[in-house]
Amino acid sequence: MGITKTPFGEIDDRAVDLYTLTNANGLVLEVITYGAIVRRLEVPDRHGKLADVVLGFDDLASYTASSPYFGAICGRCSNRIRAGRFELDGRSYQLPVNDGPDHLHGGRGWDKVVWTAEAMETAAGPAVRLSYVSRDGEGGYPGTVTASCVYTLTKKDELSVEMQAATDHVTLVNMVHHSYWNLGGAGSGPITDHELTLHARAYTPGDPVVPTGRIEGVRNTPFDFSAGKPIGRDLAAVGGDPVGYDHNFVVDGAAGELRPIARLAHPGSGRVLTIEADQPGVQFYCGKFLDGSLRGKGGKAYAQYGGLCLESQAFPNSVNIPAWRNQVILTADRTYKHLMIHRFTAA
Image 1 (cartoon, rainbow, N blue to C red):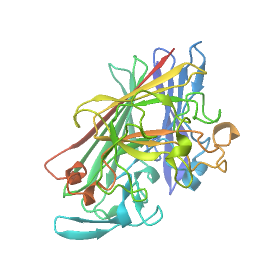
Image 2: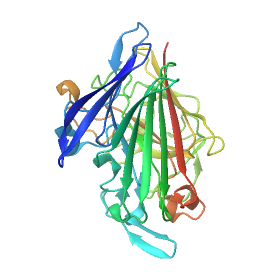
Image 3: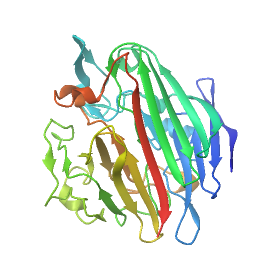
């Protein structure tokens, strides 16, 4: 069990470091300070064989060239804001648009900056704290925000992701952790055979992809994962261009309380991932925009549906929906807090 630190390159004259955390059971987590990215996570299958279950790259240049948020902490306000426009504290704001006509994951956001890091040995297991100060006006957002993320690889074979932020002026904050999961191993094939359970009886449909404020039940629709099913079973019925899931689900239970949000199982390896979080929603993205053009670790091509994301979050476009607006507004007298627990077992 322990923590090591090694160089991982340089960007804009700033060194980027790689931290390797190993827990008492032999699980291995790699985190780089660029984007606060989880680069590698090795967990055992039913026979004890380790495999890296997150998509990523071997070198920094690949992350800076064209990464679709592999393993990153996204912010300041993650997911989509329609047309990049919102009103706050009597002022109108226009953010850069980087996803068609909309603003996504903070534009040139926190996934594209170098964070400072501090290794920590904790009672729960080895950890690394990453911190970043986003100055007033950065990305078009008001207020200076001080953000942090603590990754802990616990003795219970959990990846804990604890995010916090504070501001000196009213602003928007919605931090998400954006790992792409493939429990068969990164680059091993599509995740359509993975069995997914979502603890969500409703979702927020979009027009076409950005939520409008409607909440609809998932029963008798392709979006019903309440009883668990293979991801590929109803994939074609979801529609879209390309076809597949990229939707926000309304997590059962009270927002602000740590509660189950998802269970993901890979029949071939026996690996099981269960996730608990305290946010109101979770974005399920099936990797439909992957197209084989990105070559990841070991030179493996990441084909369509090669990895999936389960992003605990506030609802997308919340600032423009009166009933959801307070989910993303952060004032100087409050601290934003967001906790995710990823638990790994094998069956």
